Image 1 (cartoon, one colour):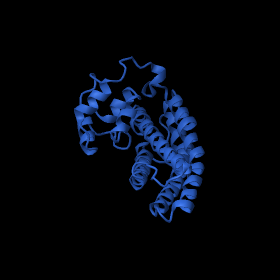
Image 2 (image 1 turned 180 degrees about the vertical axis):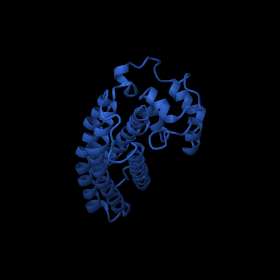
Image 3 (image 1 turned 90 degrees about the horizontal axis):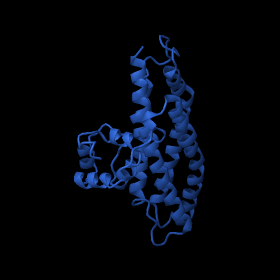
Length: 238
């Protein structure tokens, strides 16, 4: 971490070494939707001690990050393939399973835990919004960015949406909405904690929601802080 001053943005810090995402998750630091914040500002927003976070980052093994392990150094097509095959695929597979488990919790425990009905409604909204969001990326934005990265691809041509910054702004707003919804769910569940009267399904559902949030953070980070800035730079080279 010594090469990253506290004035570096948290998006840049994670882009340089994805292992740092787990540290930020531990301290509740938003490195994806608000990846433009400096480390100092992000720590202040999360009520985390900056120097404690720096020490945790410094405690990571000091090993160079190989290009193959650093998404910031991948070709655009490789990065998009990874986002779709890893994160989009995970979201689509996880959403119905989590929804079923949460619905079971509402049926069995909803009388004693009325917050579960709010969790179910919030998660259902997230599912619908993310499915539409991923479809727009896969059918419109990502193909255009792939063409931008090709030598001669669509350079000089017209996009269906003007500058690539227009759909990127929309995608970033939708990322923020999803992040806000998961923060609401985290608060409603007291940090994805199973109550004393909870069952095994409760444990499973809380673990699944925690994993879903962690994956969303990495997913959004790769788009907001790596792919989208690269797409903007490529378009400006026309």
